[in-house]
Length: 207
Image (cartoon, one colour):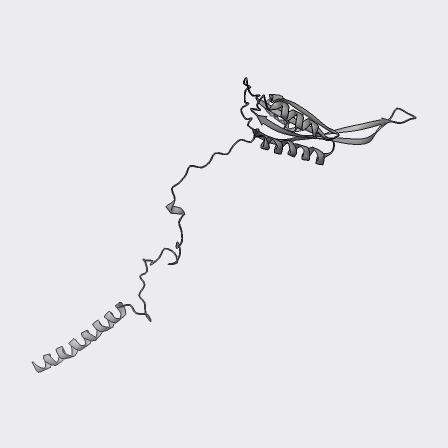
């Protein structure tokens, strides 16, 4: 019996020491942290995502892009006002033409005349040909470039039109031509530069 008790006394301390070692390995510490193989503490770094606020806003529908080549609706004339009018300024000196069109635009703002838009038309080039004194050959003596600017007015009051025309005609600079006419489809198409090569390719594709 004494021999059996001695064996039990030896085995109990051994088992207690084994349990203590296993518990020490299982408890995490700063020097020996415990990380599970199949588990991540963070999906990314712990500081990622701080300061984000876009997800708190309501989702808005995407804005549709406006078609720049779409013609605006023309204002029809009434008994007391004109419709859509084009004040066209043209001349050979681009600086004078630009300043005169700006003057007309600012004058309309002072008189509370609604300016629909202000734009430039494609520049036209004119070649001046001279014939030689001896012979029938001609040569280019000069190239004249005509610059054009358009100030488009909307709903110009009929009682204010004479005053408006009188002032802009008195301040018209030399070498500058002025014309006022109603907006048409041909005036809208004149804003775009013709591309015959592209039109030829489109015609070939359509055949």
